[in-house]
Length: 387
Ligand code: GLA
Image (cartoon, rainbow, N blue to C red; front, side):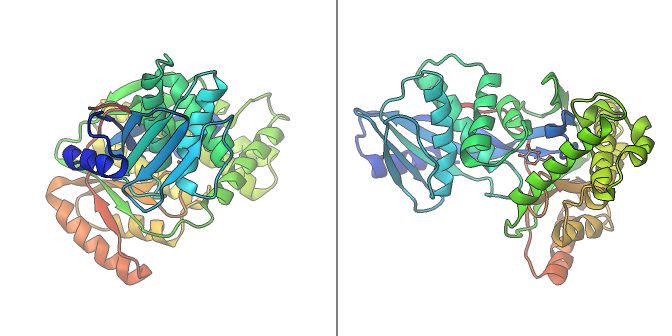
């Protein structure tokens, strides 16, 4: 990130070189294991990336909010008068939703100029949305001395996404983006919100993220459909015991699902959630014991379950994963995020990384007609002021 150039762009856009804007950064995230468990009160294991969203922000006189982004040409100016309503300019809804949360809590916002720049791909399952929300939340918190703790900002950002943007996500993304820690993943219990930072030491291996570059399609509606199926499973399982969420069952109880859930699709959704929780717990344990091989096997099992039981993968993700597994040096590979497109995350021996990327790109392109992108991220810190 060239801070000088970014600041220059800010001045070109908004003028007044006498007052310096303040720089904030919020990461994207990759989830290592624990998919579609967060809204079921389960375990997740994400980490923050060194890719994310940069925000330069400055107070101005009056009541106008000015938004701009380097990523595309879509400037918006809007007046502060009561709460905002959702606009057709999609990206603006993320900051506006967050601003609304501040306003609802009685924080008086005044005129501001915002310039965003994101280097995490949009809609690729790496939480570009949570990243924009949290960078805005952290900046407003500081600018108006609002005094909210990180957890409160995380919840406000999730609320912005659920209620303003209209995507009924769980808490994982905003949490990972808010609480990220360099070289650590976050072992989070999404029911109690207690968490532990676990060091990610991969020795002779590295993380590789592969973007399917599949255009985002039905992700949101399918996501809500899965949530509905999980709610249905919880309802049916009341005949077994009074649970609030699927994560109150353990892997030893999976065999009981057949008795209580007749619809095979709903039963498979429940099976995925319960088995995935088991895999996350084991994954964290083996990682602490430095057993990367088993960690990789659990990543593979996670993907298989997301494909067969949760049915959120698709030809692009499956091609990357199953072709990837055939290549030398691949310890584990799975989809990450909501699914249906977006990215995979793989652990690959460093010595084999270059070959992994070139060979996978070739076979993926041949089978799907799409060209994938590869990222070799570092694990970074959560949202913060950086300048
Ligand atoms: C999206 C949502 C998260 C989580 C994942 C699936 O990223 O925003 O809350 O549910 O999908 O694990």
